[in-house]
Length: 270
Image 1: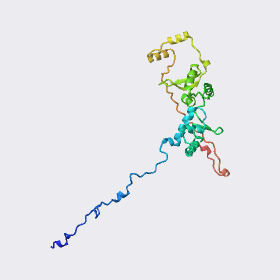
Image 2: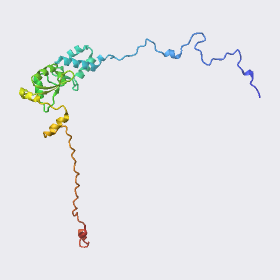
Image 3: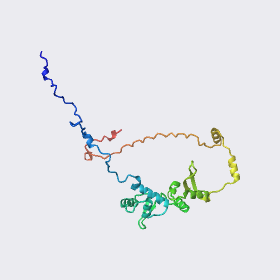
């Protein structure tokens, strides 16, 4: 069996190339990698959006304008609104967009008067005086009241006026349990409010109810009265009677022209 020849080996004076290329050039200076050449410099500035703050957003400005109209309580011109919002006169883009939103009929909180070219706040309720409140409640077709929250939306002094009207028995008012503030109001007729005799009140309060509910129930039954706690008796519904079908009457007769030929078997009907 033949062995490998040593003459096929690489000569000693010939250098073997490295499997990975060196970064150093023949002159000894380090070459730049391709990735180093495409890295961005630290001084590169990229484009930024023109509106970076929420204050420049159009709907934010509309919100500020709506709050300003509500606090003012009167119609305002567009100049008064832009002066409050600190919008420059030459900023036509923001001014035009603000006008388009404020004059849009679908804007719920702002009302535009084209004749006077003014803007006003549109509250949930148009009531602003005690007389208007009484008129509004009297014209209600149902017994629905109105919440104080809706009244305060366009009438800042509503809680004080409601307290004075309640003291005069002109309103029926429900109050919040936490702070006692007025919550909902209804119309009331003070002429229907009558004071009771002190003797009657005394006799009324002398009546003592039994502490035990069972004892109260027994006394009501003994007096021939029906207690409210008595269980309702279940009413059994009678089964519905099935209607009997009426016998069929003679239908349309056929083969009349053969009556003399055919036999009559009607007497054999059951």
